[in-house]
Length: 220
Ligand SMILES: C[S@@+](CC[C@H](N)C(=O)[O-])C[C@H]1O[C@@H](n2cnc3c(N)ncnc32)[C@H](O)[C@@H]1O
Image (cartoon, rainbow, N blue to C red; front, side, top):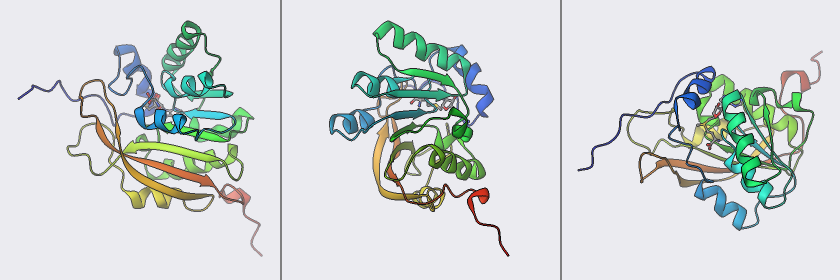
């Protein structure tokens, strides 16, 4: 039997991500796009301007930019954004990377047709998930797509992020989004060749407002 390395970090609040990136290469930072997102790109599923939300060191924004898309990666971690910018420079790829809060994407003043989220949704608590999905809706016009990879409840053990059930995804994305599909997938990891069991979610921005209370007409 192969001895496993100690459990990877996870479940820590977002402000700790800088410390995680400073400590070394985190388990999700595999140095290439996740195969599930690579397959989407190969299948021609990327359209228009691409946002990589919680981009980490930027592999998915870099993937999109290398295919000719105007691509922006945002992350709260200054360290992660510095690493992503360095990669873009080394590879000669024109992706942009910005330190920003994915819960306040409207502050970017930009619009996106395609969103990649690998591993961001699953770090949020229940309330933040609702805010995050609304924040995405603020910057994605109707018809835009969100492709999301998160840990699934099929993943055994309790290390790392919270496991996510399909019904939790459908609840979070109800309103301003239409969930088109949720498929079993894998998130590759640095420390385990089996990776982690994941859900690959495809959601389309529906017509209508983002779902914020401020969008609703006053009552009375
Ligand atoms: C599990 S990592 C995934 C990183 C990257 N998507 C990847 O696949 O390598 C989650 C990322 O979300 C970022 N993050 C957490 N909360 C955030 C927030 N509110 N806004 C933007 N980024 C956030 C973290 O700094 C971290 O880089």
